[in-house]
Each structure stands twice: as structure tokens, then as C-alpha cells.
Image (cartoon, rainbow, N blue to C red; front, top):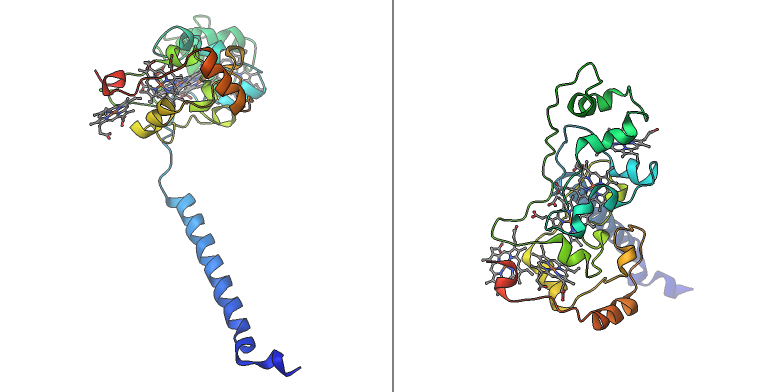
Length: 214
Ligand code: HEC
Ligand code: HEC
Ligand code: HEC
Ligand code: HEC
Ligand code: HEC
């Protein structure tokens, strides 16, 4: 079979080596990007609060702690006294909760009453107006904007809070869901239902500059 030994066939191993080298170089670049590239902001907090633990082990939903999102601009962070409803009984002696008891539990020996100052994770520029309630009451779910928080041990910022992120959805709204699903992180987007709700609720977000900038 002389065809097998044509000059081009002789180069086959070389091509394979080059292709393999290329694949390895791409893999190395991707790994390096993940290790050393820009990371979404996730500040350390005064108490190592984990959304993953509370969603999975305590079976809570988002609005149990962030109910202001339904009727105010800010979703807010719960008062530390509400944490004690559970933590007077759940892991009451955990060193990870000492700071909580010092802040909110007058019966604890280390009580100081000093509030817990959570570090802000998401921060829009002051010239932008954002309001949770206008979104949440129009079927834009928490997980559409804060995807994956329910799996995080340390809360991470929305990776892209740019103007084009807002405008993409305002120009052609997506992910609209029934209101009873609003804080269900397992909800899977249903584009047909979303389109129907957009019609039914006459959803038409503004795109003029003064919608978001005053
Ligand atoms: C047990 C109460 C609790 C539950 C349940 C809960 N959160 Fe939180 N959330 C907190 C606390 C406390 C903080 C502040 C500490 C931190 O940032 O991790 C916080 C912070 C956040 C932040 C960042 C705040 C900032 O500074 O920008 C977002 C976004 C958020 N939660 C969304 C959610 C979503 C979405 C859900 C449901 C999937 C949820 N939370 C469920 C208590 C809770
Ligand atoms: C349309 C996108 C969007 C939706 C939907 C949304 N958020 Fe937010 N969220 C944001 C943005 C943007 C910020 C930063 C706001 C700022 O800096 O003023 C934020 C900030 C927060 C914060 C920090 C505290 C505050 O109020 O600024 C919490 C907590 C939070 N969101 C929880 C939730 C929860 C819980 C839901 C669902 C009930 C939800 N968000 C739905 C975009 C969204
Ligand atoms: C509905 C009950 C409930 C509420 C309310 C609640 N937690 Fe928890 N928390 C739990 C459960 C359940 C665990 C996991 C217990 C386990 O690992 O066995 C937990 C674990 C923790 C831990 C880890 C402790 C350790 O030693 O591993 C911290 C820290 C914590 N919670 C902080 C908070 C804070 C802060 C709040 C208020 C914003 C809060 N929790 C509100 C039920 C709750
Ligand atoms: C996933 C879709 C989505 C994203 C992302 C989103 N919005 Fe909206 N926005 C909506 C919907 C839907 C409404 C409600 C429109 C209605 O009631 O007709 C709305 C309403 C608003 C309103 C009230 C005025 C109006 O036009 O109804 C403001 C202000 C606003 N959004 C600002 C923002 C800003 C700022 C951001 C980015 C930080 C943002 N939105 C991101 C979907 C979105
Ligand atoms: C749906 C909301 C929305 C609308 C509509 C909107 N913007 Fe923005 N704008 C934003 C957000 C969000 C940012 C980024 C803020 C940040 O970085 O924290 C921004 C940032 C900006 C900035 C600062 C530079 C930059 O790119 O970060 C300028 C200037 C600006 N917008 C001008 C405009 C003008 C002019 C219009 C009308 C043509 C407009 N915006 C419409 C939400 C909006």
C-alpha cells in the first residue's frame, strides 16, 4: 500500500502533535484565566454567612430574609435578631456564631449589642436608580439577576452590572415568571410563558436615559 507513505501521510504525526499542542495551550490559558483572571467581587463578611447552608439545610426561601424586595427599592439584609429565632437552638455554641450572639442575644455572656455591619456586595453607581419592587412584582425573579447565590458559601456580586446588562432586558424583556415563583432559585425559564406574561401584564420597561438616571 504505497499511498500510505506519501509525503503528506508522513506529516500526519507532525499535524497531530501541533493540534495537541494547540489544545494544551488553550487549556493552559483557560486554567490560568480561572486561577489568576478577574474574579467577581466577594468580600469577606463579619460572620461567615452561607446562602448554600441556609437554602439547603434550613430549606428557606429568599423572601424569608429579604422580604423588602416586594415593596421597596432595597431588598435589605435581615436584622441579626431574626437569626436568633433559629440560632438560639441551632448550633448555639458554635464559635462561628459568637459574633451574632454578641450582637443580638442579651442572654449571651459576650453581649455588646453592637450591630453587624455586612459589607456591601453589589453596588451600583450613585447616578443609577434601581428598584427591586418594580422588577419583582413584574415577574423578574431573584435568580434571573442573582444567579447561583443559593449555592454560594460566600456571597458573590452580579458579575456584569453594566448599563448594557440592564438595557438588554429593557429592550426585549426575558425570564418573566409567575409571581409565586419569584424567589424560587430552581425555577427554569420558560420563554413561551414569559412572552405570554409580557403581553398579559403589558410589560414595557423604559429605555429613556431618565428611566434609570435622574
Ligand atoms: C437566612 C437568611 C437569608 C436567606 C434565606 C437568603 N439570604 Fe441573601 N443575605 C442574607 C445575609 C445575612 C446577607 C449579608 C451577608 C452576605 O452578603 O453574605 C445576604 C446577602 C445577599 C445579597 C448581597 C447583598 C449585597 O450586599 O449586595 C444578595 C444579592 C442576596 N443575599 C440574595 C439572596 C437570594 C437571591 C436568596 C435566595 C436564593 C437569599 N439571598 C436568601 C441572608 C439571607
Ligand atoms: C432585575 C435584576 C434584579 C432582580 C430581579 C433582583 N435583584 Fe437584587 N439587586 C440587583 C441590583 C442591580 C442590586 C444592586 C443595587 C444597588 O446597588 O443599589 C441588587 C442588590 C440586592 C441586595 C443588596 C441589598 C440591597 O437591597 O441593595 C439584596 C439583598 C438583593 N439584591 C436580593 C434580591 C432578592 C432576594 C431578589 C428577589 C426577591 C432580588 N434581589 C431580585 C438586581 C436584582
Ligand atoms: C430557619 C432557621 C435559620 C435562620 C433564621 C438562620 N439560620 Fe443560620 N443555620 C441554620 C441551619 C439549619 C444551619 C446549619 C446547621 C448545621 O450545619 O447543622 C445554620 C448554620 C449557620 C452558620 C454556620 C455555623 C457553623 O458552626 O457551621 C452560620 C454562621 C449561620 N447559620 C448564620 C446565620 C445568620 C447570620 C442568620 C441571620 C441572617 C441565620 N443564620 C439565620 C438555620 C437558620
Ligand atoms: C431581566 C430583565 C431586567 C433586567 C436585567 C433589568 N430590568 Fe429594569 N425592568 C424590567 C422589567 C420587566 C420592568 C417592569 C416594566 C413594566 O412594569 O412594564 C423594569 C422596570 C424598571 C424600572 C422602572 C421604570 C420602568 O421602566 O418601568 C427601572 C427604573 C429599572 N427597571 C431599572 C433597571 C436597572 C437600573 C437595571 C440594571 C441595574 C435593570 N432595570 C435591569 C426588567 C429588567
Ligand atoms: C435600564 C437602565 C438604564 C438606562 C435606560 C440608561 N442607563 Fe446609563 N447606566 C445604567 C447603569 C446600570 C450604568 C452603570 C452604573 C455602574 O457602573 O454602576 C450606567 C452608566 C452610564 C454612564 C456612565 C458611564 C458608563 O458607561 O458606566 C453614562 C454616561 C450613562 N449611563 C448615560 C446614559 C444615557 C445617555 C442614557 C440614555 C441614552 C442611559 N444612560 C440610559 C443604566 C441605564
